[in-house]
Length: 146
Image (cartoon, rainbow, N blue to C red):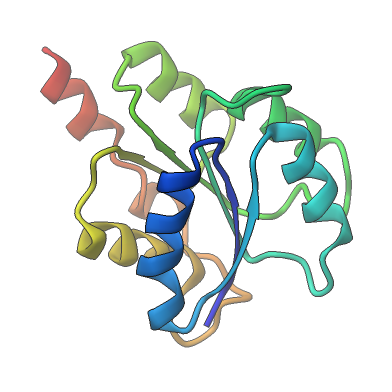
């Protein structure tokens, strides 16, 4: 399936994601801060097909990480899905403006996470990401906040 790089500083959250993704055939790589995400994304060959990022990480937060990734031709086209506890409207809108392919709130249902990942990387052809509008759920989050 897909090569997925996780950017998450909480070790328990990393292990949970790995337990959900690995049995599905995904190859999982983990970085515990934004700087390491950027370095790993550039170094991995072949590159990851998806990044799962938390917004709040040490050294560089999720938004700083995305900005850094978009500066490099090797990493700028890797789809990003935010996996975060932040339901703030500003974070949802900032994610959408940054070109994030998906936004899922912690705690999440594993089935929903896997469905969103499949929508982004595609089950049959992981090298062809699906259109961003199909996976981004900002309207659901904005309605839930009101």
